[in-house]
Length: 84
Image 1 (cartoon, rainbow, N blue to C red):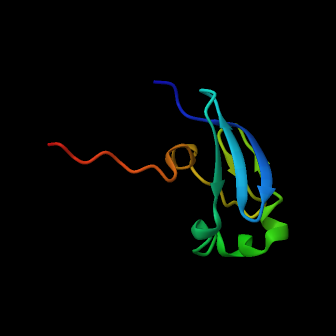
Image 2: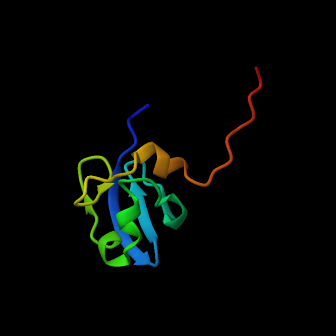
Image 3: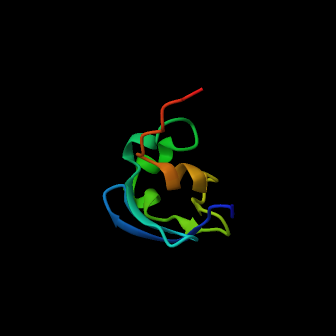
């Protein structure tokens, strides 16, 4: 399976970003509840949050914060129960 990458990201409103992935999947994610911890706390300032850029794999901010593309791709989905 090919590695998941964010190919496009567009700010929507609040803490919502529309993501497009390299397999064509598109989804809107509200990241407000994920902005905790030393590196993400500053992004609660909406003006900083809006200033993300796209690197070869995912979005990132000037302070070095980023989210793994796999995390974004699977965000909000209920994992399948373990059947083992």
